[in-house]
Image (cartoon, rainbow over all chains, first blue to last red; front, side, top):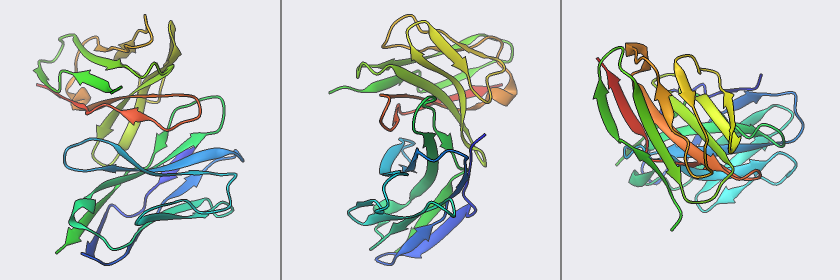
Length: 115
Length: 111
């Protein structure tokens, strides 16, 4: 079974600085999706970024980018120019390419932004 | 705008009572999911459905059931609520090639 591990329960960063959240996963599949979701205090789950495993280029969305290392099964999220609104729980998630559509989530990393 | 809504947003119940959490989506997505969120566990899959009349068990399905009589709705039923089922419950939907879209969550407290 696929598993997703986020080894950092909590992280903090100074406003305007850069922070990287770690995620590793275990799968025997060659094609799959990876996601980062953000959960602010409102509890809403918000998609931050997605990566298809067949794409060698790392995904980017404005200040958010990933470092996808397929061989190492690593999928870290980099947040540049951190803002107070980035404070949230961040979840890494894995989904197989075909067949089952369900996501497997990591345990989450709580990110605090210090002003 | 298309959306996914959950009700109730907050509920307090007693041990042994039957509880149903509603989930309704207007995206016409085939796939629907129920997750529970607990501290230290992230989100864990309870049940999921790939279409009308289709339901499947997730990793933490004991004590829960779902039914899918139409595309829009996937209600989650706790047959006999237990304190261990105190949690935040999320419904989500998706198409086959996309990410999951989540509802706002339902906080359930079982006393």
